Image (cartoon, rainbow, N blue to C red):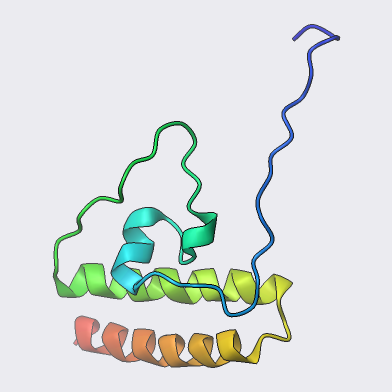
Length: 101
């Protein structure tokens, strides 16, 4: 790379408390729980349609728990998000036990 080449500076908006959220299946297909962070690289595309089966539902719940955990890393005082995290973690645990049974 030439020494005069500029570097790209990425921009990701800071998430606000109480931000809108996708449903867990929409979050999984779009790759983010938060519509405000759904910033496609090149062309606007809609998330793919996922099949409706127990494995996909479990994956969607696990994705939402991961997304909320990441959000809480930067927003530790957002009690609404923490309550959602606990709710979805319990749902994920129950779904995992059901799926593995």
